Structures are given as structure tokens and as C-alpha cells.
Length: 270
Ligand SMILES: C[S@@+](CC[C@H](N)C(=O)[O-])C[C@H]1O[C@@H](n2cnc3c(N)ncnc32)[C@H](O)[C@@H]1O
Image 1 (tube, rainbow, N blue to C red):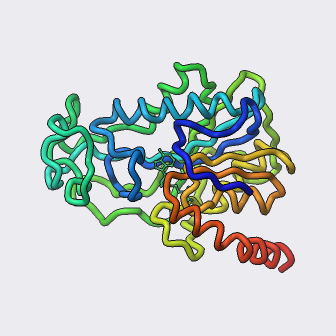
Image 2 (tube, rainbow, N blue to C red; image 1 turned 120 degrees about the vertical axis):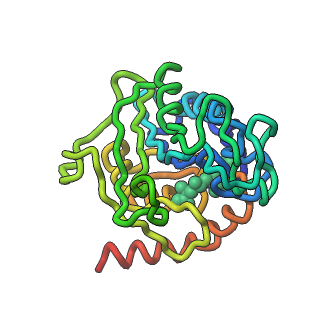
């Protein structure tokens, strides 16, 4: 497993070396502050956010093998609630302080108050038109809603997982598991001793890897955070590279690596 402190817009890997990417970039709207300069997600509007991710996926495309696939996890975000601390989106370059991070009072140009931005679909469609094959949209259904009950709309209890291929013919394997017959996957949150605020469940990553890579293949997560994809890749005998801008997150992964391996081994033997 290799950990690299790097911006996902400049991936320090050779061309066509990666088989599968499983990743969850920061969502648009400054929902979370990862505490690093250059972090994605604080752009002024969804168009600039999509442009940032297009840069990342240009690099991902370069390092991906022609038979490779990408599993991209994103969640939708509301344009503005009217309650945020950041003033009007139109007048600001980006959110860059904790106060501003609470969200814009006014929506970006083109959106109304309370509109969903549909950022995940803007990203997916932009990737599709830039050459990626958009092969599947999976709804990751969470067992519990991720926000408090609202008076005027149903609470959000899902995220999206886009499956993208670099070429028309790519590697895929029917894993002979029940979930392969569905595009709605119910998976519980899975926090296992990390302080990272946005961890992917291990089962989500496992599903992506077993159907799109083989033992020995190289797996990349350009936004590795607490290292979930790397951990699952290692437990499935894949090689893994993780990038993140945040040195504290990378240090935490390095510190926990040995205990992960031992715990996975125990789980497999149990
Ligand atoms: C949603 S979290 C990923 C969580 C991860 N999937 C996990 O299970 O822990 C997004 C990560 O992207 C990192 N990040 C933000 N901007 C970045 C950039 N430009 N390049 C690389 N990493 C970045 C953040 O530090 C954060 O850890």
C-alpha cells in the first residue's frame, strides 16, 4: 500500500497502471472542511466544482488501464437554505473560513433558494461527454436518513455511485452475489475507529472491487481520506495507492495499517 500527499489534479503515477479507482471526492458546498489549502468542494458554484473534478478525472483517465473502471461516490447538495453565513455565492470566490463554510444565504446564479444542485449528475454527464462510458448509477441506500426530519420535503437517505469505464470493452466480472442483480444497494455506515468525517463503508468498496479487479491489480483512491478503499483493496490482495492533500489523514492511515491487517485476518478466520 502506498500513501502519497498530493493533489488529485496531479497524480504522481505512470500512464495506464491502475485497474480500478474507488473514490469519494469532497461534495460541493463546503459541507466539510478538510483543513487543507487547495481542497476541492469550496468552489463558488457547481460549474467550478465540476471543472475541478474534470481536471482530476483527466489525470485518472491517464493513469487508468484501457480495461479500467472508476467507481465514483457523490452526494447531492442544496443550493442554499437562506440560513448560511456566507452571504451571496455570486460575490465570493470560495468559502475559505469556518464561518463562511456554514453555507451561502443566497444560491449561486441559476439556482433558486432550496433547489437541489444535482451536482452528482452534472459531474457524471460532464465525464460522459468528455469520453468516459457511464455504465451504471447505483443508489447507495442508507439504513437511516443522514439529516434531521424536514417539514417540507422527505429527508435524504441515499447517495450515488457512478460506474465509469475508460473504454467500451473493460474488465468486469459477475461476482455471483445477490446485489449484482440490483442498482439500489442498502449498506450501513461503517465507522471503525477513525475520526474522518466522511468514511465510505467497507462493503461498498468491496462490491466495487470484486466485480472490477483481480488479485494483484492496482487500485487507486485519489481522495483516500481515512483509507477505506486501500484497506479493503489490501484485504482482497489488490495493491493500493492512496492520495490525499491532508497529511494528518495519511499519517493516521500509516499508523493504523498493521492493526487493520491483523483485524481483517481475524475477521476472515472467524
Ligand atoms: C469524502 S473524503 C474521502 C473519504 C474516504 N473515502 C474515506 O472512506 O475515508 C474526501 C477527501 O479528499 C481530500 N481532498 C480534498 N481536496 C483534495 C485534493 N485536491 N486532492 C487530494 N485530496 C483532496 C480531503 O482531505 C478528504 O480526506
